[in-house]
Image 1 (cartoon, one colour):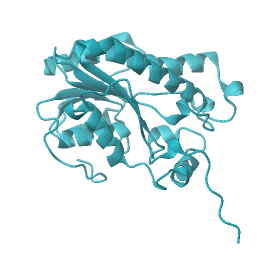
Image 2 (cartoon, one colour):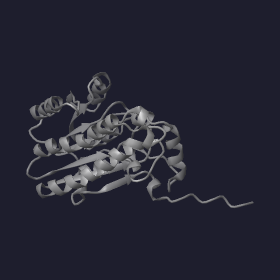
Image 3 (cartoon, helix red, strand yellow):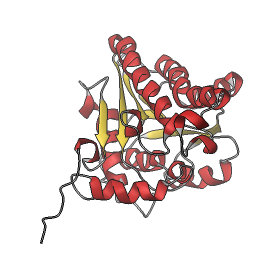
Image 4 (cartoon, rainbow, N blue to C red):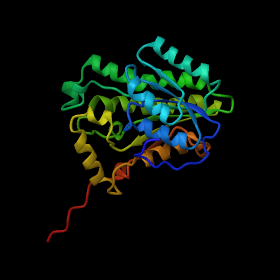
Length: 272
């Protein structure tokens, strides 16, 4: 398990199996979630971006993940092969973590109106939003009659106009809407679907956004708790939603951002 995170141990996920996507390195939010799930007894499969094997395999081995496979969500054959590899190892799955997003770097800066292209917009929507629909359908088909849980990761740039987030914000808004429709469709099957909205965190995704470092500092200063979003907090919220603790929760957007999303404007310092 990663030395960076002190994840509480227990048996909340004992006997449960599932898929985690989006692990890229030890700073990935998906990795923090996987560490918490492993600490609670879950068995997992990692589906990762092609070409990331050298980074992902050692992480997987460190927490006992035996199924590791590449998946290009823009290629149906690749997605088929990835899920087939999981089916060969696990008869059924109990949870699925969708942590996949992409937008062209040139569109994550400056003016949304001026910099957004048709090709870039469609690609961001395909990878960041449609991939959730496609994977949720496949994951649900692997879940038992008793149901399961699906979560996806989003950000407040879907709800507010965040500088430089641009096309990704629009794609995340579509993702959140998709999670609600999926919750409606899969609810009768006992499958819960929720979205987690962490605050800005030091990840590869943040590094791709112009002014990403400033987002960290401003997020801390403007949050209700005057604190950074912690990996332990995000992983704990994911554990709640993926475990039986979240049994009656579905269709929700859960903010885990130290209260950043509730703030209007900061108080001015008192005049001397």
